[in-house]
Image 1 (cartoon, one colour):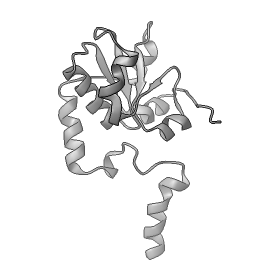
Image 2 (tube, rainbow, N blue to C red):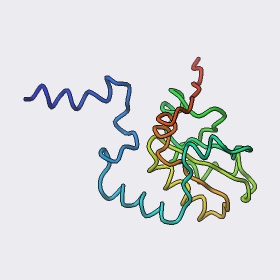
Image 3 (spheres, helix red, strand yellow):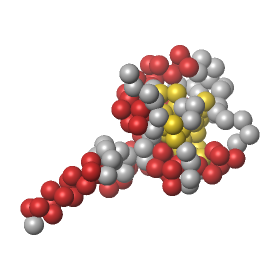
Length: 147
């Protein structure tokens, strides 16, 4: 049985998934509740709705740099969740600009959207299901070349 437990702990790494991804089963109940609370104040957009938009909003990936480098939505700008509030004005100085934020599974994105709204951004959306939802809906990603 110890081998089975070890397998379950290592499986995400073997499958190329980071344990820190936004999967509800991997987060504390308090974190998920915090994200769900944020969802009550924000607008989530589905991957299908995003794909149908004639004019794309500014897309911001709030995952960590290594997650972003492995694959992100085409054209997404990267600002890690930890510095989003400090750096968002560098890429979105106009608070009326539409912004879509996303993470791996939707929780960090919901929290990011909530904070951007609190900062005065008026057209903020979070991608429902995050990058996982995007991929499941058939969305494509691009990778960042590392030197």
